[in-house]
Image 1 (cartoon, one colour):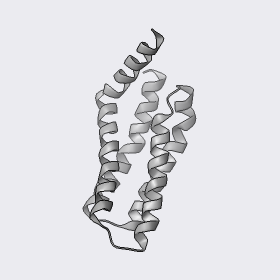
Image 2 (cartoon, rainbow, N blue to C red):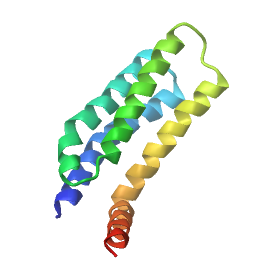
Image 3 (cartoon, helix red, strand yellow):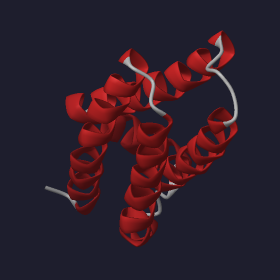
Image 4 (cartoon, rainbow, N blue to C red):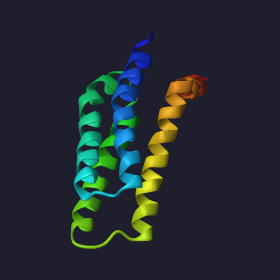
Length: 123
């Protein structure tokens, strides 16, 4: 397993439990669970950032960090008001994005696409 493959496996190992919590959140909204998910995304991004930086591929960690920060902001915003349809759409979009990333990593498509991109840059 290449270094990037191992890093992607670790990312997926951390992402899967977050997605499970997130699925629960979308079924039964809880602001405290949203805050926990936000913290989990931040922890995931921070914990693997240096490893992905060595592989010159920080984007996954930065995306997880950004999602965590935005979800943290949303959790604070939602403590003072009711959940609206646009909030549900926003939260669902983030879930869908990370579910797609997880599926692409799991299938090998993510790494294959990254390798094709790197190969095209070398030409």
